[in-house]
Amino acid sequence: MRVLVTGATGFVGQRLVPALLAAGHDVTALVRDADRYEPPASVRDADRYEPPASVRDADRYDAPASVRVVEGDLLEPGSFDAALDVDAAYYLVHSMRSGSDFEERDSRAAQNFADAASEASVERVIYLGGLGEDRDRLSEHLRSRREVERVLGEGTYELTTLRAAILIGAGSASFEMIVQLASRLPVMVTPQWVETPCQPIFVDDAIEYLVGVLDVPETAGETYEIGGPDVLTYREIIARVGRIRGQEPMIVPVPILSPKLSSLWIGFVTDVPAAVARPLIEGLKNPVVVRDHRIESLIDVDRTPFDDAVRRALGIEGGVEGGVEGDVEDVSVHRTPSAESAADGESDRSTADERDPDR
Image (cartoon, rainbow, N blue to C red; front, side):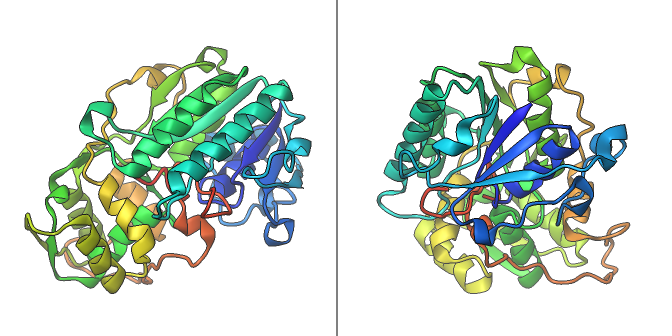
C-alpha cells in the first residue's frame, strides 16, 4: 500500500516509517526541510528504531525498501499536494508548545490537510490523538487534539483515530520529564495531579497498533483507545521510574502549585523548557484511562508491562531495583523539535506539528 506519514521527523513518525517499510508498504515522508531528514535506506538501516517482535521476525524484514521524501508545510495549502498520491495517510501533527495561537494553527493545519487529502481522493487517514473524557474539562492541548480529530473527520476519506496517553520511549517529552524528575530530586513537592490515573503505553506497542489498522478493514471510520496493561497514578509512575533507576523519590503533593508555577519549577530542575512543560503539566490533570477495549480483539499486540517498557526506553538490561545502581546514563530531553512536540505524534515543526501522544 502507498502510505504517507506526516510529521515523519517526530517521536512517533521516526519510528512509524521503518515499521511501515518492514510491513511492506511504500512510504512517503512529508517534512518541512528534506535536508534535516535522513530516511532509512532500508529496514535494517533504520536509525533509533527497535522493531516490535512481530515485525522483527517477519520473513520480509530483510527486504530492501526506500522512502520518498516530499517537502511541504501543512500551514501552506498547495505546498504538500505532491505527497498525496497515496492510498492512506498518517496525521501526526500537533504543537506541543504553549502560546495564544497554537489551537488556531493546529486547526488550520488539519483543515488544510483534510481539504487536500479529500481532493486527492486519499482513501484512509489514521490519526493518533489523546485519551481523555470530554466531561473532564480537557486541558487546552487535549481539547485542541479533539478539535483536530473533529476537523479530520470532515474529510471524504475514512478516518481511523487511535487515542493514547503517555507514550513510553526515549525522546518523549512527557516520559523524559518524568525520568528527570525521578532521577534528580530525592524529595519532590508536587501538585495534586500526581494522584491522577494514567494508562501509558510503550511506543513500540503504539506503533504496532498504528501499522495494524491498515490490515484490518473494519477499523476504517472508527475511533479506538489504546494503552498498556498497567493503570497507574502519576505518583506511582514517578516512583517506579525512580526505583528502576535506583533512587525512588519521596513525593509530597500540595494543593497550592498552579500549572504556571509547576512549569517554571520543572523548567528549573529538568531540561524541559517551561513553554513545553506547561502544556504537559496542564494535561496531567485529566484522567487518561482506556474505557473502550474493542481494538484488542482486532489487532493482537503483546502489550509491554510498564516496568519493562521503562527499562527498554532507558536501555537498562535486566533493570535496576532494590536500590542497586546499575550502569545507567542520565537521560535528557533531546534538543530536537521531535522532543518538543506531543506523543501522539510529534512532527518536525513546533508551530504546526511529538513525542508523544504526550498528555
